[in-house]
Length: 114
Length: 113
Image (cartoon, rainbow over all chains, first blue to last red; front, side):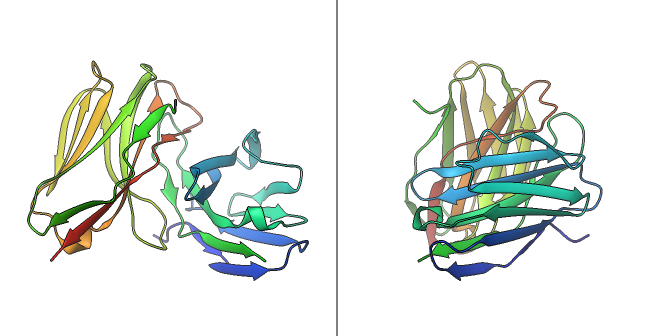
């Protein structure tokens, strides 16, 4: 079975541009999580969805960040306008429904804002 | 103080050594404990998953939980260069219907041939 798929793997863009990151969770998984990873702060949870509905977005740093999940097999994380401090690796993870199911991660999008 | 503490390393060991990786935590409600392995430029990969106290073994890997001390460990026997990666501990409390995890900052391990 395919794992969590993220695209693009790398993104380099200039400050002020809109950035869209994409994620396809594992089929049958009801939970989807977006994380950001930096050397300074480690893995930070940004937002998570259950059955396509956003449950907790308290980790989203600013209004410049938004996330959607239009269906069970696709989610996007958008940054508009982007800033150099948004440079990080962004991970998507998914898990089965049920209590304390482990999360399975994609290979991330390495984002550089110049 | 962070909820989950992990020595960032790097930890450098010779091939064949026994490796001990550790995390301490402050939330006594944590019941589920996981170890993830993250290779460079890859996502975290679930390695071990344990519930409550005790040991769990899987091949060369042993996960140990001491809830009384709020301390968990991952032991790697006969370490190999391919074990070189960052190891993240993660944990969650009972009745965590949202499947949210609290992660440690990760320990970077280097196994030298």
